[in-house]
Amino acid sequence: MEPTSSSPTQNAVAVVPVRDYSALYMPIAIVLAGLLIAGGLYMGLSGGNAAAGAGGKPAAVAVNVKDVKTENTPFIGNPDAKAVMAYWSDYQCPFCKQSELSTMPEIIAKYVDTGKLKVVFKDFAFLGQDSITAASYGHAVWNLYPDKYFEWREAVYGAQDDEGDQGFGDAASIDKLTKTISGIDAAKVAAYVAKNKET
Image 1 (cartoon, rainbow, N blue to C red):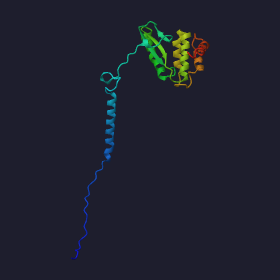
Image 2: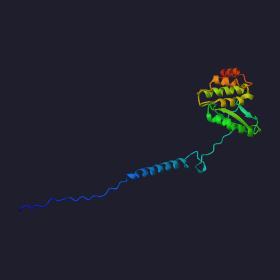
Image 3: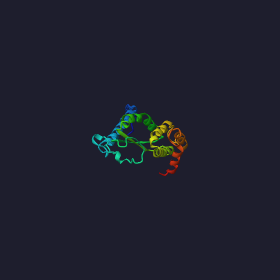
Image 4: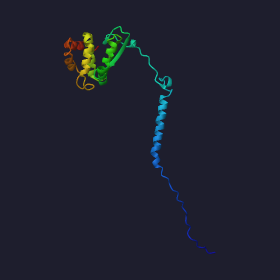
């Protein structure tokens, strides 16, 4: 038998249109990121937080000024005032300067001058050597001239320049400023600082 010739077979290919989803990638990524952030916030702020109190709010920490060492510490106001405020600051801190020169006068007028409040000044010298130097001078002024301490303190904050060891605040500049305050012997203050440096 003789083979029959046949026409070549044609393969049929179906063309399926492909949809472009690339425009959805960004919105989907944003939604997923939002869900992850929301989940993290929920887990972090939920009752799993050991320090949280009712409603997920941080629990109040009991603080008593009686636990703060105040002996031989500079203060203003009635020594026997019923209310005592411990006030930590750094002579080189711009925020401390703002508080000292704008808020403190109001506190003094309303509460200290009326005998209701004693303000105890505590050092939080964290901005460099000038902070430590100024704190040392502050204690010297307090120990030698307690009635001039607050005037000296205000003058130091008024002279403050850039934060940290940037200019005013070294021993020479504080000595110079201390000489401008009537009733304080700047040489005696400097000698006291040198003698009590370790303390």
